[in-house]
Length: 291
Ligand SMILES: O=P(O)(O)OC[C@H]1O[C@H](O[C@H]2O[C@H](CO)[C@@H](O)[C@H](O)[C@H]2O)[C@H](O)[C@@H](O)[C@@H]1O
Image (tube, rainbow, N blue to C red; front, side, top):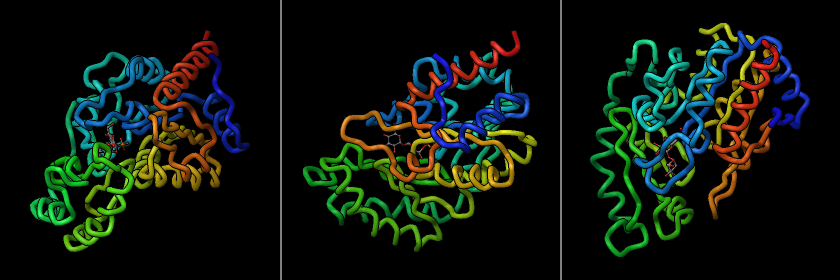
């Protein structure tokens, strides 16, 4: 398969710029919904078949490949199977929306001190949920809390009887709980996360592109948290940096693609399978150019 053509002029220019100087290009991708299929149980998410191989093919041909995720960095590395992969020796995982960083070179994580509000909110969460009806047999019975360590706690509604309605019901009370403890409420696909303010994927990507002196960027994401990274690419693009925005469309039954993301994307692909095909097409094109 050839590289799909971006539908916007900026995307076409961005792709041309990336292919012209791949040695200066950063390929940055979200994890859940982009490199991994969305599954009901967050613990069971794994890299999409062929994703790691495609990343390992592409990484030596570009300046850098980075995963930018809301997951704790180590969790993304574990679920993705990103550690000790030949070809991914320089992989970077920016976890917790950029608050954490894992480097494949050292296999170590740099993490900020735990935010006290996270522990406080986590301890109040069971009561808040119970008051709203998260008890056996009730509507929110299958709402699930994901403990994300000292940096965040997430409440998932994907397995609830009515996931979207549950999300709406929880939004206000969890927003209040977050505010009471100096946290921000981060909405995502059937999830609400309480996490410290002051960092997002846009800031993380911006800093990483500066650090690597990037000459082009491709960013792929699927969720609301990726909008900040899109914002960074759009801003840098206005300043002359070639950039391509890829949206991994929802392929799950009953779930729609995040409209804000699709509207801003240069290229919409069919979920993680489409992302893997795109990565392979880029690697093929760069192989052909160097042959
Ligand atoms: O930034 P990401 O890599 O996309 O991570 C965002 C959140 O993804 C995870 O939740 C999502 O994926 C789950 C597994 O497929 C799914 O069950 C859930 O409905 C999705 O919202 C993860 O559990 C969160 O911690 C991440 O922050």
